[in-house]
Amino acid sequence: MERVVKGDKLIITLPERINETNAAQIKDELLDLIVKQYPEKTPELDLTDLKYISSSGLRSFLSVQKKYNKGKLTLRNVNKDVYSILEMTGFDDIFNVSKTLKQVNIEGCDLISISINGRLFSLKGGMMVKVFNSDITLDQVEQEIKMSQKAIACGVPTPISFSIVKCGECFGIVFEEIPGESLASILLKNPGKVVSYAKRFALFLKELHEISITPGTLPSIKDRYRNWLDQAKNLLPENEWGQLNALVEAMPDLDTFVHGDLSLSNVYVTDDEMMLTDMSSCGYGHPTFDLQALYASLVAIEIDNPGYCITTLGVGGKTCRSFWKAFAKFYMNSDDINESNFKKIATMNQLLERYYILKERLLDTLHQ
Image (cartoon, rainbow, N blue to C red):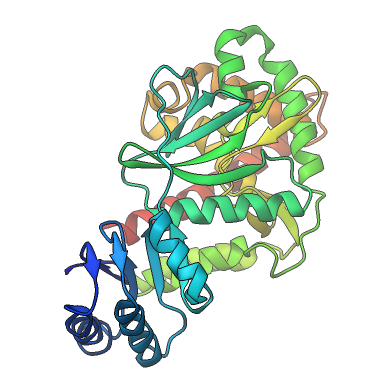
């Protein structure tokens, strides 16, 4: 058996056959790894290679489960035949079982859009597939599909997700097809319509920010920042940590829906509505968290890294800045740029700049 430690997980790959000949040995090896050598890790049994398991093999799994007292063991990449055995014997209720992921071939499929963590392709039959970058783990993909389903239940307009698949060596999610284009793609083709689409998006986002989320349904964005602060406490100078913490705590507590990672590439425009994709970071909190992400993607990061907008969104920095200026005006209900409204927008930009620096400082510190 092969074992790999990834973060807090212990991934153990099982052999092709488990029967009377090797079941006892496999049980002992699993117990040694899970209970003795890596008791602090969460074990996952990878059954990619497993073609056959006998009743002796099932009993060895059961023995390991009884010794593991932290919940159900996870069995991943279970093929059709082995899954049938687990289902027939009721073992699919004893363990967390996930079947082998279906392979989807995207060769010849039209590329719809590119986001930070993947690419979206059109499939036959009114479907599309998001193919994640190779560094995105299965846990992260599962998180995105789970959050997408929760967001739909809360009334957030986002495509219906169906299943997790494999595209070569990368993971993917199959969605219903969106009959439209990303906002980034539209602005690339129609730079003269920046103001009209900025207004439409501002009105759309204001409606989203009126959706009330029951705590516990989605995670708190403010708690996410607090978690980052806790992890960075011993990595930052005390006075700097205190300043960042004060910024987070100063944010009012609201139950508003927040996408958490807004950019022009994950907003889609159809004939009669807008929809959001990339829901893995969504939660509830103050709308400033959304405005900060949008401001960062359109203005702040481009200032620090010229060319960022064209590389990630396909839209030039000048167009992105123009979009932000128009969006801010409409979001703040400032159709007329008089001195008072100009000051309101300038103040908001300064606030968002501080929260952009806060987030970048924390994430840079944690990724060092």
